[in-house]
Length: 199
Image (cartoon, rainbow, N blue to C red; front, top):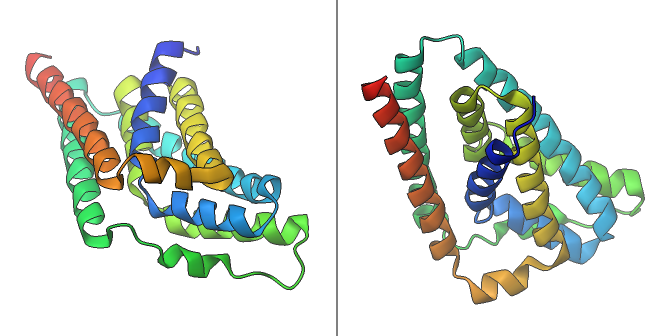
């Protein structure tokens, strides 16, 4: 059964976590070199595959008893917040993703979409947002709502990147976006710990 409020919460959390990620920058770079619709098709397909894998992994976590599960989810969210802040400090505004946008000899749909798909598939495997999506699937025990929220959030970030994320990055510092995402994750961790303690 689909729950719009769960999907909305997942959308917000995943959107904030993915926005400062280097794959958003890669989408921006690919979007400046190739037709936007071709780039978006490849990136969207890769993100859909990642969400399916994450939701499947998170659904397995729901088999654990409720209190230990909430404690595990809280630890994972807290770890995700730390990783997000550490990665932002380590990489800064990493523009090395521009190298990933090397122009193929023939810019057909399949070549461009395939390049975008492979880039995101490799770069996002085991990434923070994939781990977060698995955590959210375990937290809410609602795979459809979590999957819809996560996919729409990732597609929204990809769309922003492909269609002109440079304007957003000029107005909102990357460190601010990263810190907001980390604060949201710490809040979710605290709520999970609270539920683990109170049962």
